[in-house]
Image (cartoon, rainbow, N blue to C red; front, side, top):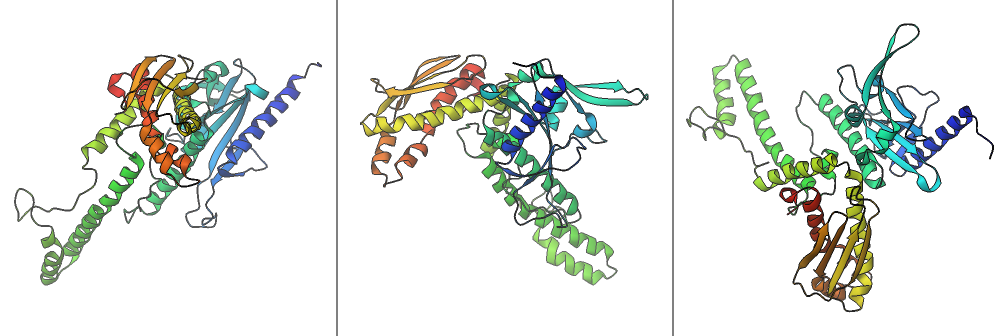
Amino acid sequence: MTDIPPWLKSMEHGVLGETRARAFLLQRFWVLSRSVDIDGADYLIQRRLTGANFLDQRAPRLGVVQVKFIQDGATTIKIPTAYVVDADEKPYGEFFVLVCTGQEDDQRMFLLSAPAIVAEFERKTTTRKDGTEKPAYMLKGADLLALGNYEVLRQGLKLDEIENALTRADLGDNRRFLYRSGYVKPEKDHIDHDFNLPLENGWGDIGSAFFENKTKMTSTLYDLEELVEAAEKIIATTDPEEALRIYDDVFTQHIGGGYSSRTSLSVRCEGFDDDEFATTVRTHRKRLDAIRALGVEAAYFDLVATYRSEVARQLEPLIQSGVTVVKVKTTYDPKTLRRGIIVVTASSETPKDSKVSKSEKGRQILHINVASIATAYGRAETGEAQKAITGRLWQLSQPFIAALDEIYLGADLVAC
C-alpha cells in the first residue's frame, strides 16, 4: 500500500469525522453549516420546531458542535477556551464536541459538553510569535479513549443530552425575556438531562413528578404576585379608603396561619411536599455519581438496555412453549461492563418471584417466575402479545439491576 502523506491523511480524517457526526446529528436535529468555521462550529444544530423560526422575537437557540477525528491515543485534542466558556468562565450550555476515531469495524465516538470539557481537559496557555497568549483546553487522545462515561454507545441517550441542553437554553432565554413578570410556564422537558437518564428507582418517574410539583407551585406564585401587586398599590395610593378596600379584597384572604392571626400571611404551597420524591431524587443523584466515578456510565446504560431488549426477544418463544420460570444468565467484561451477553432459558427452579443464584462482577444468574407475564401474554389480543412482555419487563430487569448495583455501587445504592 502506498504511504499516504500526512496532509492528505489529515484531510481524510476531517471528512470521516464530519460525515459520521452529521449522520449522527441528523437523526434528531436539523443540521446547518456555514462557509466559515468560527467559534468552533463545524455544525450548527436546531431542534425540529416547526412552529418556531429565526424571525421570532424569541428565536430557538442553536447548538454548536465541533467535530474532531483522532487517529489514535497519541493525538492531542485542543479546544480554545473561548469556544467553551464565556467571559465569566461559565461553560456554554449549547457547545458540544464530537470526537471520532477508528475505521470500519473499530469506529468509536465520544460526546463532550462544555461542562465535561472543563471537568476533564487540562487548561493550558501557549504564547504566539507575536507575544499574545492563546488559552485552550487540551487532552491526550489516550486519556479520552479511557473516559467511558462519554462514549456514544446508545445514540438515543446522547442525542437526548444535546436536545435537553438546547431546551434548557431556550428556557434560560425565556426567563430573561419574562423576568419582569417572574413567570415561566412549566414544561415537562424543563429538567436536567441527568434526571432523564433511565436509572431504576422503584418509586416512579422523576420527570413527571417534577413537572407535577412545579405545576402546583404556580398557584403559590399567583398568590404571592397578587399580594405583592396589592401591597404596591396600597403603598402608592394617597387615598386611605382605596388602601382599605385593597386590603379587604386581597389581604384578608391570606391573614392567619402564623404566630399572630392579625400579622401573618399564608399562601397555598402544595408542591414539593413528598418525602419519597425528595429521597428518590437524592438517591438518583448519588447512584449516577457512583456510576460516573467508576467511569462506566455509557456501558452501564448500554448493558441494561441490552438486557431488556434481549430478554424481551428471547422470552416470547419460551412463553409460547409453556415455560413459566426462566433462567437469565448475563455475562460481560467485569471491569468495563461492555460486551454483554444475555441468555434466557427454561429453568427447573420454582421460585415464587425471583431468585439470584449467582452474582459477581462480570456475571449474574437469575431464576424468575414469569407466570403472570405468560397469563397476560395468553390473554392479549392479536398484535398486542409482545406488549404484554415489554410492558412487564420491570419484573425481569429490576432483579438484575439490583444485583448489578449491589456489586458495583454498594448495598446502600440498590434501586428499591
